[in-house]
Image 1 (cartoon, helix red, strand yellow):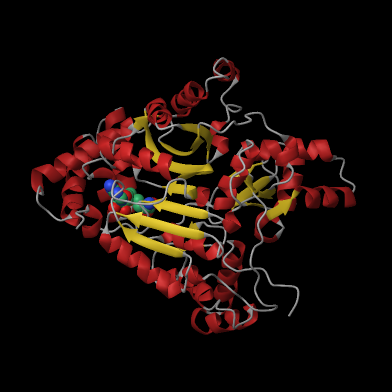
Image 2 (tube, rainbow, N blue to C red):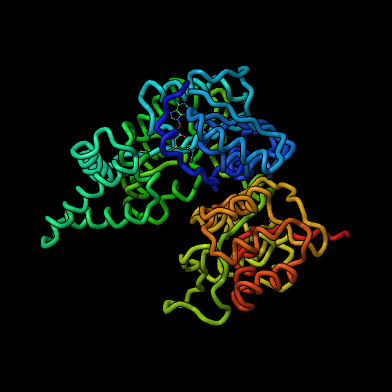
Length: 497
Ligand SMILES: C[S@@+](CC[C@H](N)C(=O)[O-])C[C@H]1O[C@@H](n2cnc3c(N)ncnc32)[C@H](O)[C@@H]1O
């Protein structure tokens, strides 16, 4: 029925952290949109690939209803197999094109469309917006991700070379053969430009090493597909507006902040205060942005653009950063934090930010509510009062060190038992990325995978450490277990039996 290049070369779909429903919901509520609570809502994923994003969400929100579709029947078959394996009843998958997908109007509270918009023809882009406009519930939100210009133009040169290599030597070849032919030409470019220190040579050398490290499926679909047409944000918004949709927010609000661009930029952007499209477009240019994760809603919904502290303080604050050490500070005297699951180290702007961030990092999953933070500050005699705490949290959020979530109950494990999610246990059997309970994807080492796999709720953490130690050694097993617990692969223990 369908003729998708993804049937020939499937793409392993991962959880999209910014698509965690309570994260989208928090941004919508902050602007006065009464979007449905993620725990009881309906969700549509367009172009869901092999289902890794929607399945993790469906497991996380068992009382919500999920529908996901993709053109590639092979990928949909994989998604259905994974759903069956996880025993989920609240999600259905359909092999369909965007224009062929049928649903009742105004059905879905959340629509997610990740990595599709730039990768289809202009005609399908329009069909995508038309579907969102038709299927979104009145207070619904749609998250659409896409590549943007002018930032992506540099990568466009890499794409031209890759496509020229495939055209020259593998016009009718399989995806893997095309990738090989493309890389050969790119490699030749770097050899020819080896001696010069010109911009072109440097950029291609860097591009080659990036593509060599990337999975072949990504390289093929990003650099060799017929379509990968980045857009100017303003053109994206023209299309959205034509389909009665308006801009609500970027899924990563720190990307909307102008605070770190200097005074001149701030002044320029301030002159565009009342024109969110022009302002965002200029931000793309100033930050050389290549990719967007834009949240849209119906243009009939009145939005409150100014930050409402009364709503802000009702949300949950979440951080992926943990303090490096109580004692050591960076050369400039600032406290350092490392991002869990990466090598990234950041410095808290000031001591009060460090105090709040380290406190948050010690809560389960790095998540805490305003009242909890305030109470703890008060108990330890901190000079930070309610107003100051609010200011600190706003800064941390705008800097991207803290995410906002709509409060949600997290399921718990039986007391003393280690419980990971069904999808993580399944993914841990393979060699690809594994999804944490925080809806993040992580590459795990062997012993870490073992720990996640053993988390079926029957064993304690001690049991798991002992079992993994039999194969990996005691120290390695302890470290692996510590890491996956920190990454949020295990539910917290319930207080009752
Ligand atoms: C880059 S992949 C992204 C898949 C998934 N969202 C992810 O993030 O891994 C693009 C997906 O869009 C699907 N697609 C392309 N054109 C489509 C169309 N007209 N209708 C439905 N799906 C389409 C492809 O089959 C593919 O799975």
